[in-house]
Every structure is written in structure tokens, then in C-alpha cells.
Length: 230
Length: 331
Image (tube, rainbow over all chains, first blue to last red; front, side):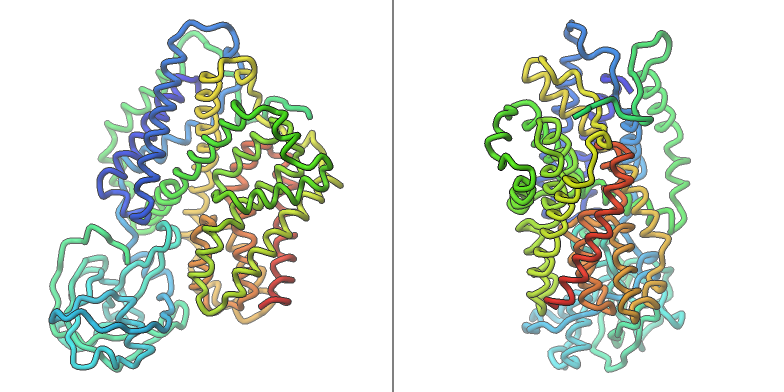
């Protein structure tokens, strides 16, 4: 791969990073906080490409000819392809089926939002239900947003991927659904579920972690949220 | 130190008559755009789709760190005079090793960035033992990583201390081991005649271009390997190993190598593997930033395969031992 070709690949790579970080595409792969660094890295890549093209246009003395240029650089076309042409979706039901639910931990259980039904995250709901026996949920209707994942007994569950850095460390949090209208949409569909705390508990067959359940009052399909991770 | 042109993944880029790289690249891009629909259709099965997502996200996550590391290594290669390192590091190599390890502690780097920096340090005359100690210490023990560990293990603050100490010990032991057993001709840095004697601006951008393309290409290889493991290894397999104390340590050490998670995130993954003992999770945290698939791939690219074939397994063994010992004493 000669230098002009390297410059073109760098330009495309930097451009792909910039395009992903200036739109919402990057949220499918990394945390929101990485955005300024992604933009800076994209600018640096584009600058390197432009500087290379400029220097290569100038007449030069002979150093720079006939020595080793990295052939492995051709592989950089793959991420360009992935970001510009394929743009794979955020992690979803496949990961939820393959990995065990996140073990929840104790927290301080601040009061629920005053809205009715109260919007609440899956992780928050699970830790309130499992550790606090649902005390802070008593008498309240809650609204959970997630996608449908196949549960251990074939019944659909609600799941969301929790990401701490990038999608490679994404792990699902699962909440079982009980009672109410049957959720009959295919796995991977995003839904919003309104319901109340259920005392039922289950175990995830993958890692034997406890799963909290929600008594469903109603549910509806929604468009996937901009921020797919929790 | 003998610095020769590296092996099979490099070739001479002489201008030949006929199709050059740019023409090949242009044809390839045109084909990709034409077959775009067909390509997206390929990425249809859930497993394959997850593979692509993990592959892209590992790269997107690593890019800022890679670019930062490359910029810093270009500054070292072009603007920092050789005499600086002679003054900054202790003259005796055995003392330079701990000094370089401590320098790694202060610099918040990621493993993808520290590989080109270490290569650049060796090129500028720093003793390889010290550069390698820096290579291991920088991603494993820096303020960001230790803070992340404290956040991920709120109930076990001793985990932070154990991780920092064990990783520091591994970096220094590997540096000293290199002094006793290492041979400089194992290291084959890519040949860079364009850096000598060129104007500084030109040399700087040339170093940036070369290092991003080179280290970035190997990062792509590593990310592909990590995505494959992520999709293929079902978590249920691991669970059966968790109950045996020795097997669980080995299982998580191997998993750290295979998953290739960034050192700033691995503490959260370790925290979620709660069926495993604290010691085995500590080993996961000590091994991961020092030996993993994407690092092995990048090190083979920057230092040569003869080097990596010896350095990576040795680091793995030392890291498992140091992690287990720290776990036995501190946890």
C-alpha cells in the first residue's frame, strides 16, 4: 500500500469516525462521554491524511522511495466499511439470550419520580424488587422501556443491554413479565411496559442470577430509543 | 540495537508500472459501493450482526486512544532529542525499569496507545527493558483505570490496591527478566529511514501516518478476534469452572486474553462475573491490560513476531502468578 493509498484510507477512516460521532450513530457502540475524543481523533486522522497528500505532491529528494510500507493497512478498510456501509445495530436480543442477566446490587433507593406511571430503568427496577422486596415500589405504577428477549421457559422477557465502556462489555439486564395482555411481538422489538411490582422471582439459566418480575397492566411497541443502552 | 525491516507483513512499496495501490483501492471502493445492498444483506443473522457490532465498537472505542498514543509517539520520535532520555532515566538499566514503570502509572493511556509509544522510546535509544516496563505499566495502572476499579467494586476497596500492586510488580519483573534473558535481536522495529534527516514537520506527519496505518491495521485484526470470541463463547461454559479455585483463576486469565476489553472497562466486566472468586477476578484485571488478542497482534506488528512469541506467554505467566499471590495476601 503506497502513501497516497494510505492517505485515502486514513481520510475515509477519519471521515467515518467523524460521521458516526457527529450523528447519533456512535451511541450504538460507545458511551456518550467519548464523543469529544472521537471528534478530535477523527480530525487528527483527516489532518494526517491531508498532510500526507500535500507532502506526496511536492517534488522530493530520494528518501521515502523504495522502503517498507505497511501492507496490514489494507485492513483499515474493514472498519470504514462497517461504519459507512453496514452501520450494524446496537446489541440486542441475541446478546440477551447468550449472556446471563447482570447481578444487581443494593443501593439507596431514592423516591420514585412523581409521574404516574413512574419511568424507571430496568436495573433500578430489578434492584428495588430483589433487594428491597419492592418496598419502594409499593402502590406505584412503573413504566419500563426495553426490547423483547426470549425467556428461559419460552415466555418473553423485557431486556436491555447495560454498557460500561463499549458494546464489547455490554451485558443484559432482564425483567420477567407476568399477567396482563400477552406480549406477542418477535424478539428484538422495542416495547414500553406499564405495570406494578410482582413478588414472583425467577432464575436466569445462564448464570443462576435472580430475575425480578413485573405484573403487566399494558404494553405497546415503540420506536427504538436514541440511546439504546442503559 | 539492530533495527531491520520487519517480516512478512511489510513489503517494498516501489512504484511498479501498471496498477498501483491507489488504483486497487479505488476499484475496491467502487465495488463495495456497488455491492452495498448485498453486503448489508450478509449481515443479517443475529450472530453475524452481533459480531459486526462488537467489532465496530471495539474499534470505535480504541480509536481515540490509538490516535492519542500515535501523536505522542510521533512527538517522542521527532521532537524529543535523544539526550533527553539519557538524562531523564537512571543510567543503570536495572534502575531505569522501576522509573519507567512509575512513569506509566502517571500517564493515562490505553493499551492501544502504549504500543506505538514504547516502540518510539526504543527507537530513541531508551533501553528496551525500561520501554517494555512502561508498555505494561501504562495501561494497567493509571488514575482512570484505578478509579474505574474502585467504582466497579464499591464493597472491596482492597481490590484497587491489589490490582495496582500486582500490575506494578509484573511490569518491573518483566523489565528485569528482559535485562537477564532478553536479546535485542528479537525486536525488529519497522524500518523508518524517512524519519532521519527529514524536516521536522514532514517527519512528524510521516510518523503519524505510518503508525496509525500500521498499529491500526493490527488493531483491526485484534478487534476481529475479540468479536469472534465474544459471539462464539457462551457464558454458560464459564459457569461450570467457577467453583474450582485453580480452574477459575485459569479460566478468567484465558478469558481476559480472549475478550481484549479496554483496561478502562474491564473492571466492570470483572465485577459482573460475580460467581467467580475475588482472586480469579483480580487475575482477570492484571492479565487483561498486559496480554490480550489485540495487544498480541499489535505487538507482533510493532516489535516483530520473534519478540511477541516470547514476551506475551512470559507476561501471561508472570501476571497470573503475581495476581494470584496478591489475591492470596490482600483479598
